[in-house]
Image (cartoon, rainbow, N blue to C red):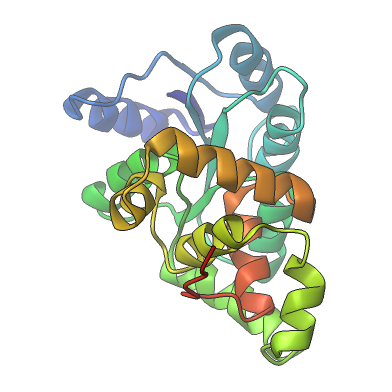
Length: 221
């Protein structure tokens, strides 16, 4: 994991926290977004944890440069913010983040969020989720079958099923256990669905599923 955080004291606290998690390796910690992007390119961490405010470039721009880069591969980003606002949450999701949490969350929450994202899942705090839902549902009611078919018509039945399970909050391992398929099969189908739907992150994929009513749907081949 790579950490990008401007405040020295908090950065040190997170470094210590990650050191106590036996399954998480913190490979570098920097203050600024520019250095963070450079290190992400050189070190290729599985997860980048960054604050929405960072020197040089802010966390949203740093996340965008990392997740949209041709060298990004499977690098995923998790955003931290002192205050949850719709502007920050939606901006972060558009930048490609897979997680968004408030600074000051319980230790277990932050560690589990990083684990979930590293497994290919997504993690939004309750406040961040509320921002997304408030943005989606006042503007559009849950779509009916015609709208769902129009948006997801290019997906195979298996891809639709896996997207619907991801929208319920299941990570790739949980989906593979549920459907009795390999982890690689789930990852392949989810990635193909993201490409077909033109979304950059799992969080965006989940939002699309909720927007169009594709949640918990069991498809038949």
